[in-house]
Every structure is written in structure tokens, then in C-alpha cells.
Length: 341
Image 1 (cartoon, one colour):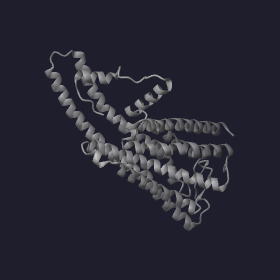
Image 2: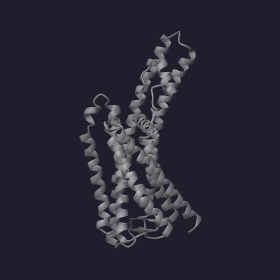
Image 3: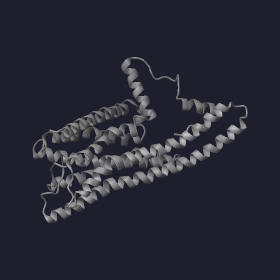
Image 4: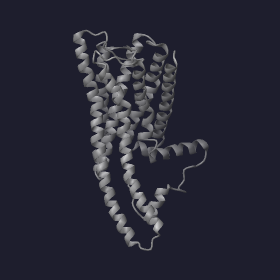
């Protein structure tokens, strides 16, 4: 085993530990907080976290063993199972992110009717579609015996090297449909939903800016430093919305894009995938499982509150109190302006 393969094993192990711990924290927050359970996005986040935990406990260790042994870690049955779980979880994860983007689009564009438009019944219907969609694309290669250990990715996945000409053509069509119906579809939904959210957020920020300037002009006796802080807070709000959208879409493209492009490129007979690049692209997919808890949940106010509450109960004292707020909240209170989430 060379240094590069040892490094890959360490990277996969670190990603697996980070993904497992962070997603378990999300599950604990969901179970301990009635506020999170009462919100529809919590269902999508729960499904996403469960997928990430399964990936960290099944697929990542299997890939690490594949790198260490340089071949199929166990028998054919195990390899088929790992391949099925890998395709299912990857597809389900992408669709869960698309569902979250749709939920946020409805919340921002239709704030007054959100509770009636996004009920638990619709959320479960969206998840039901995601599960059926994922099952159909993950079962097909297993039933058609298209799964085996791939040295290019050091993991059990769909392969086409031993297929006949007719089967190879069918495999190409299937692979194109798989990535078009999972990666491309989810990316389109993400872009359309979040760009609309950004457009609406900027429109509201402009309206708030007008109200803020008019208010500051009327309050002639307010201290200049407070006025400056109010204006800076408005600017930060505009930048904050743009950064969040870039993180949502950028992390999706960065983590899934290289792997999807590699899987499509290998369909060309003259293209040979380098083993190190193939495993590295797989690691990027795995890294999304460790990023998702921070991108979609743990950095949000409800989850931070739930984490502090759990820590308080463990330590036997009430850490979370109403003694202080963030500096931005103080600025907003001084300006007497409404906070826009």
C-alpha cells in the first residue's frame, strides 16, 4: 500500500466519523425539540440525516476496505447490497435537497399561506416519491447483474466492462437517465427555487432599506454611530442571503458534480478513469454527508437552541437563558427595526 492509498483511507475515515457525529446530533435535536418536529422542513432534514448516517456506516467503510485490500472486500451478496445502498442513498440525498429547496421557496414566496401549502401530508408525499424514485434506479442494476467491484472507485457500484454490446447500450441509456433524473433534476430545482428565494429576499431588503433610511432621517437626535450600525446591518442582510444561496448550490455542485461527470465520461470506450481520481471523486460525494448538518440544520437558531438545551440537561444547569442576544440583534433593537430571517 502506497502513501496515497493510506491518505485516502484516512480521509474516508475522517469523513465517516464527522458525518456520523454531526448527523447523530441532528437526530438528537429532532427528538429533543418539539419546535423542530412541528416544522415541515424537519421531516426533510431527518430523512437527509438518516441517509447520511447509513452512508457513513455502510458505504464509507466498504470503500475504505476496497482501498486497503485493492479488491472486493467480501462476497458477491455484500457487494450487491453495498451497490444498491450507494445508489439509493445518493439519489435520495439529492432529491431530499431538492425538496428542502422547494419548501424554502414556498416559505419565502408564499409566507402567509405557507402553513396551508406545506403540510405534513405533502411533505410525506414528496419523500414517498423520492424513495420510489431511488428504489427504482437502485434495484434495476442489481436485478440486471450490472453491479460489481470497480477498481476505479475502490467500491461496489454499477459496472459495464463485462457487458455485451446490446447490454452496454442499455447500460448507457440507464446511466444517462439515472444522472439526469437525480443530479440534473435536483440541480435545476435547486437553482430555480433558490434564485427565486434570492430575488424575493432582495426585494424585501430594498423595501426595508427605504423604511430604515426614512426612519433614520426622522430620528434626528439618534447618535451617528447607531445610524451607521443600522445601515451596516441592512448591508449584511443582503450579503447574508446571497452567501446562503451560494453555499446551498455550490456545495451540491462541488460534491456531486465531479463524480457524476466521471461516471458519464467512463461510458466512452476510449476513456480510462484513474483510480486515484475515481476514489477522490467518491470522497467528494461522501464529504457532502458531513457538510449537510451544518448547511441545513445545526447552524440554524432552532437547532442551536436544542443543542444548548441538551447540554444544559446533561450538565445539570440551565445554560440557555435570555440574558443576551447577538450583536446584530442589539443593533436591530436599537434601530427598532423588524428582523428578517
